[in-house]
Image 1 (cartoon, helix red, strand yellow):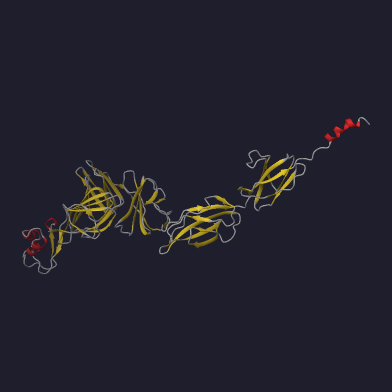
Image 2 (image 1 turned 120 degrees about the vertical axis):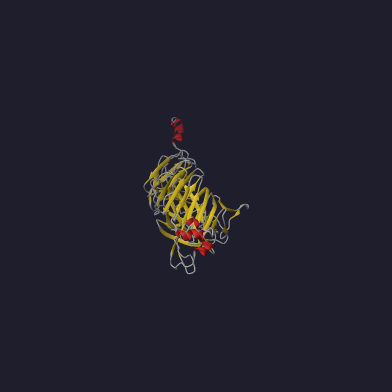
Length: 516
């Protein structure tokens, strides 16, 4: 049984006016006099302390403020049809709230207690009352489906109580932070601070801070167990530049799922994102740019959610970076000043283009069109480039992913001398940073059956025993890093027919010489 309420007598107080003002029935004045052994009910010395049973105190209905609303949240008051809930309006019991897949709402009660109704939940206000003496609050809520997060103002000895009823059990507190979930058959309670008494017709338990308990319909609530500790968010960047977010976090021992919540303020009055995933990831749905508060917690095999890790998070995704078109990823180009091209966004956007090699910036420029060229010739090598969009009022958005390309010299051109007796030596201009050259010679310009297909360490190659007729030749340079550059242009040369032999004519003359 709850302890009596202690009232300190003020000048002019007596049992009859106290009963009229604060007790359920004026006739309780006599019982009040007898209980406190008041000799003269018209002259009670100020400062006297009277003991008043809390069940005698008069109660009146109080309004509940709908402090914040997000997403699809419907309100039903009394027998009126459900409608969209509006932040700031005041509710009275009986009322009901239903949140959709992206909905949430925060209720604030007369004593300052708050209840955050999470997504996919249905909550009914059964009783919201307070006593006129001592400001004791009596709150009874019915959670039919979903989950709530509660911050209950300590009730002390005021005689107040705060209860959440579910089909499986009832959670009662006198001041604490805790969470309650139900699917109609199961109730899970997670205590963050203070203590929560969980009871149903078959049994009862008390869960303390950092403990949770599970109650099934028809079964006693399970003995409380320790909640999972907060996960580590050390690897999470301060700014997120891509949506939706699915950032890996350090796995938490004992966690089978993870919940990520995002709000605009540390109070989490309105939940802007509330996501559960099966892997060790922090997940956030699409959301506007801004600074937010993030909290992440693990969920154990019984479905109990652990303690939360919390930190601020900046989301900066706009304007989105364009998609890079050319040069394609890991492409090679022989252009000394390649044309960098990307997708065109809004006409008002400008673009910042950055070009670098081996981590050193080569060029950075701002352009109004969706293309740019380096102002100077690029030396052979590997380059990275990226682009960010610049909005006239929002400023520069995040950089897009960097993309690499290779600047290569064109394949060597060959100096072809006049073949002599089916032999010749091909020469070409040596290229820097080249390990060796590859040469092909064939009788057709497709090089389908080359006569020569060989490597050369120097910029020349000798050919012998060439047959008369046209020939085709091309050369390719392979760099010191093993990259084979493009073939040089296909060039041709003709091996002439050898001069006719004089011996056949001399042989024809031999019979004539025989007559002499």
